[in-house]
Length: 439
Ligand code: IMP
View (tube, rainbow, N blue to C red):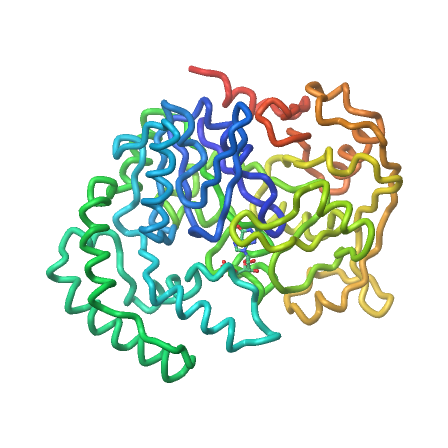
């Protein structure tokens, strides 16, 4: 058993990056399988902060090879910027340890312009996208008109096709979406020629690399982006991202079989946050919300928007357990709850006073939900310097064991700070600990 998936169990921003960085210290491969630079990971290593949105967090570990599967949508300029930034920081980045799948799609200027213009047009009904062109790029993939990295190897074939495509996109942008200016093909093309030269060495066959790695019993970490409740199919549609964010997306996003994933780790904050619009049953307003936002630095890594904050939602989390087939849970940012007298956990949803059995599918239904809570004692101690599970205050341990009991899966890891060392393992962390041991 040598592969492990890390997926977000809430609305993204659960702290997956830190965990993946921690786990990949012993991994041979770390692989992104969906999303693009709408994701943002902040890593703090030896006091130095690194922000990444495309390059997998494992890049900071010399021996780890980082892959972007075919399911990822890649803004090539952002990718190049990240690579240059890492090189400047002294990280060894080259095609022997960073590969983009040839079937991954490129996010181009018109995707970004369309994303922004559409949000503008939606006005108060906007989704609150990150404006990175993610949705329009996945739409092109589904329409079979998108541009794949493999095409950068044959620019003469791509040029006439792209020229027509840009004409079409410009008509949509200007005539239908009311954008002020069209995308200039010539400047887009000269950028692409340059990009092709820089990125060609990084293009490869991720499916092949992974299937070979599996035969060689290499250790693989699949790194999810966003979170379960933002899943394009099962999330709070339409306030979701445009990719499948659940563990099932690993197979289609990397070109591997379902049995490739041995263990699925779900990551959740000790409370809930959400950026962008959409239903959020346990959302708080006022003092407690401000407390969580300030103490937890709940501002988007990508857009710097203040995050909406609320209590832990065990109803939504139970759904995440099933949708991902979670084996255990990682609870992050437990330290942020220190100092709150009472802690609430939502255990049921009611509509018009009646408990609902089925998780609502329509966002309008979810908006109407009345959460029912249990209340647990908080703790006052600062726990950021705790390094062992049993050193946690009894109320904190009770909080964790209650979540585990309600959800029916173990909590294997708790995180009490941004640093690697503030990661505590429970007795249920056997798989993860074995994975972490070098071979
Ligand atoms: P998009 O992915 O940019 O299309 O945005 C769609 C929705 O997903 C918006 O509500 C975004 O705020 C949200 N979203 C996308 N990526 C992330 C993420 O990495 N963390 C949290 N929310 C995200």
